[in-house]
Image (cartoon, rainbow, N blue to C red; front, top):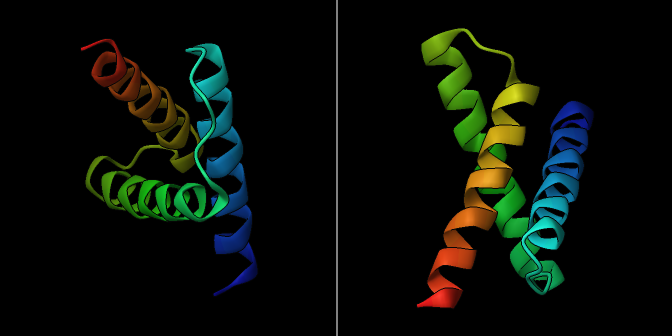
Length: 76
């Protein structure tokens, strides 16, 4: 894995943790967080290719969406 990819995954993990904290959800286990971050980065790159949009903006949107989905599931 390249340096930039590692940095993107670290950023995605921080954004996901921030989104969890904002929604008052317990943070995921480190293994799960790594998996989520990797999937988020993959999806962000796919979307960036399709839309020509900034990967950072996509990562932020996706992290907030993930936390929102989890909070909705927890409330049910």
